[in-house]
Image (cartoon, rainbow, N blue to C red; front, top):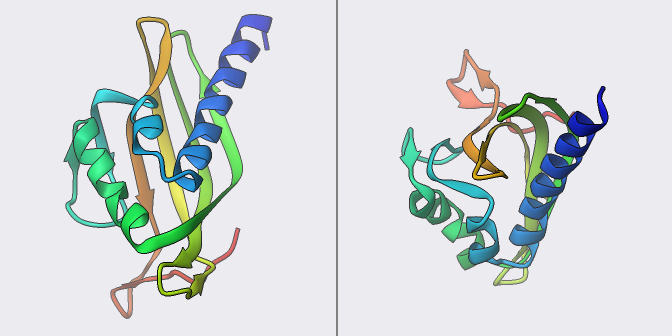
Length: 146
């Protein structure tokens, strides 16, 4: 991998790490800086699609509202980096302590990120979070581990 490509991948990995930092700090303004203004997000909760950074941040509101403290873990981040677009996938788990003191370990989800280099800055232009579906029950299989 050429040195420039390694630097680009390191920058994207740093940005993904900032998602963890922003969630654990419950910092929507910090998270906002990571997304393209016109991001299209297919998040774990409804609606089917959110368009725009404000809609994406609205998806994080329950996390900041219901949790006293937040933990966020990511595993197996794999990236493919081009000149001005990149994509990656990982497993992630959101948990923490609710405001009533209940500790939640969370569930593992699959995350896909699509980055675009906009004015020299890597931003998340699309993301998708999902859980596998148990076809027979019609429910998400939320007890799987990477």
